[in-house]
Length: 97
Image 1 (cartoon, helix red, strand yellow):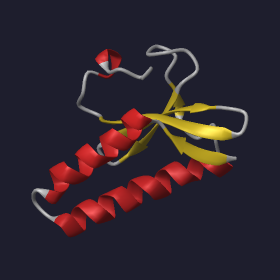
Image 2: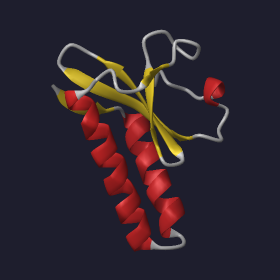
Image 3: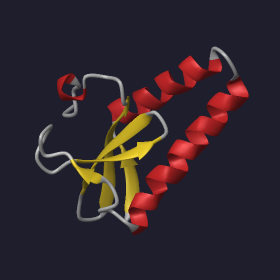
């Protein structure tokens, strides 16, 4: 099993880093490393996150500090769809790109 990031998830990471780096680049690097480690936990424990069928059937979310990692379990990979701040209107976000 491997971790696969969609283009929107990669863009989310860049946005998160840029926002935090506006205050402290070292903190931004550490935060993204923490997100990476948290997401990698899904390889061994794919069902670790909460089911989010109310948003889209078949997706799950895993919390890391202020962000939620939205993902789908596929046969050979964990597909990270988005990484969104918990204060966002999560039902309005685009998970299908």
